[in-house]
Amino acid sequence: MKFSTYEDWQSDARDRDERAGAVRWQKEEESSRYDYRTIRLRLDELRKVRSTHDPRQLMFYYDEGIHGNTGGMGSPSLYRHATNGTKQLISDYIEELAGGLDQLAQLDESFLSRDRKLGFFRRVQQAFGRPALMLSGAGSLGPFHLGVASAMWEQGVLPEIISGSSAGAIIAAVLCTHRDDELTTLLQPERLRETFAMLYDHEQQHRSHQLNAEDIREIIETWIPEMTFGEAHEHTGRYLNVSVSPSEVHQQSRTLNPVISPNVFIKETLMATSAVPGVLPPVRLAARSYEGRRIAYVKSRQWVDGSVTDDLPRARLRRVYGCNFFIASQTNPMVLWALQDPNASDPISQALNIGQSAYKEWCKATYPFAMRAVRNIYPANVMTRMWYSVMTQDYTADVNIMPRKSVLDPTQVLAKLPPEQSMSLVEEGRNASWRHLERISHCTLVGRRLHHIIADLENPVC
Image (cartoon, helix red, strand yellow):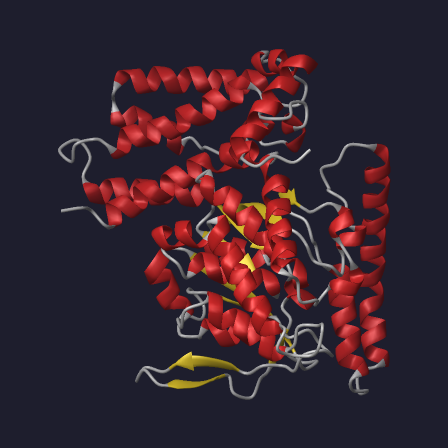
């Protein structure tokens, strides 16, 4: 069943949970799925410490360690019993953690100086970790990502760290190159419909039914302002991360972002990550020089579709930003047909996951032998490397938002979609997100609160 708003979905979910007895289950603390005794103990301790209004005791409590999975409270199984939400004990503990952080942030500087606050909150953020949203390669299914992002944006749970590859990178760039007020306007359904209609009219000027390089360039020009990665971060506060794959056998893939490549232009990077091998030509990147001129970036190299080698760059996001909670919007047409949610508990899904894991390990074991056989044979060496990269990647995360399998049509991977079909994919993304939003909200609340506190301390309002 589809709903037009998240509030309508929530109302229906509450009714279903009431009828199924899930509301009663949420109120009961006991469960074998998590260490409820530890959570209850930590919650009681925190409430007691907060009631003393002693910042030293409260800081010591957080220094003892906070983690999004304390006592197993972040387990996916705790969010499957009810349609919406989890144990009330977990919700109470997370709210109390966030409240304690606010309590420290609001202390007068005579009790705790701004510098000490900033040092403390940065340390807690490093210890707790940060959330990230990863948008997969998508082809013509890209509007699905817009629906996912729209749902998260409306509920205030969109992470500031966002990655994308191929079509997912274009959507990630939309989110990371527009300020909050601009994004609110941009994601309005009527505005989206107008933009899709304008792009479709332009695409129809070409005879081909498939997207070509000129169509993709027009999409990028329509959605994305001229910025470097560093300038986009300064403009919005969000971190854009784009995967690109090597076009030569001895190159390594890269994830460009404001930390590693702040001077690189976003538009060329999006053209590169959208360059499907064998369909669209590889692309050379560009950067802004220290003189402000546009120059080639690593001019000896060209790049192609980022989803080929690093569709979801979890390891790099963990290394650069300290991310430890990952949300994936997964619509990669190369793998979506066979993908299973790794958190699924039914026997068929578990059996399929075991089979896919075994096949992946077989691919990793045979890769060195295959590459040795075609090492000096071009383009067989490049294509072999790409094929093994596709087969051995991890395409799932902690939270996996995927469209229904019926949405996937292999004949329309790069098709030019009419506006109504694009809007249908946006709605598909919104509806697919709603059942995950409560878990995302719980698991990211402390991280989001820390982000806002640190931002306020770094940029105080005079």
